[in-house]
Image (cartoon, rainbow, N blue to C red):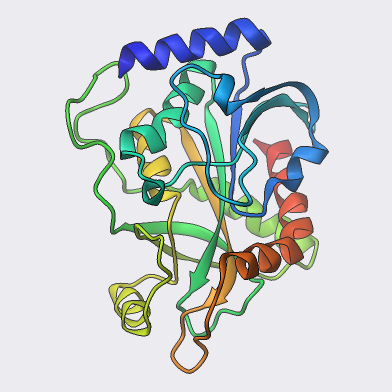
Length: 269
């Protein structure tokens, strides 16, 4: 794996001649922030050696290099999921590559189902912690060049960035929540019993991504911030049939608020 990571990073560096310090992973329906970036280079995933290819609607499948608020960054316009049939090594491979490209801070977004009865559709939730209900992406041989065998996860999500995001949200009168995100395999949406189980575990929202990426990023010493858009509710008495298109539509309603948040957060990193 280490050889492939270096090979991919070297290929990309030759194409873009850039060393971004900030990485962004754009979740379902949240690709619009790319329009705010002063784009220098764009590489389709299928052109990148060893890279997976996104197969999910709402995930464009491009690596975008450019500047935003004076900061050099790389944005993943589309991510990979365990339910697509990829191994967790493959799902998190791009995060490994981002580290080798120079990324020190990772900003992640996703869409999720809210299981906290105080949440509403359209809320932003700053993730303060997670519950991993997937296999751990670090299972297997550990490469000391990537990180320690037993990485600490006591602060997977950076407290300073959460504090800054909260300030930004209050300044712009943007409603936000803070909470714990549970990651499941999908691709089925949860049953009412599963929603109840996940809430009883201590989660506030549930989704099918993010946690493997955060674990791998922290393994390599990357500082992380993640925001989740509550696109549907898994609260008893409020559970209704949901489709992927409805999730995309719900996220797009709040996307302008996410863009404000990410743009201003980048400025203070």
